[in-house]
Image (cartoon, rainbow, N blue to C red; front, side):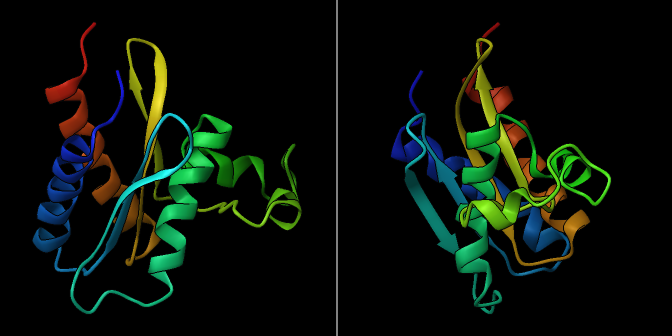
Length: 138
């Protein structure tokens, strides 16, 4: 399965529904199987830095095949990957990036930025849940 532009837009729209529900303006990015950006949307009044962070969160989840929340633990001072973000400029080590998995294969990722870490994760999870319910098969 390949993530189409239409599919990416639907994932992002579901993230926006959740962001509106918690009243936090966000930036949401979806990347594809090749690590390239498919779609990015910025809600009105989202933080300017989020335009840079959302795609980096998606890329990090894609490149390391794990959520950025999980990476945060591994990249902490006592973690196996401590200092990773200093070696790779596209790596973000805090929550909001989650891989998109279909039939056991990673086909892309979603990245969300604009709130605190918990809010970013909550909004990203809404997009992943929508993707899993609508586009994946077992």
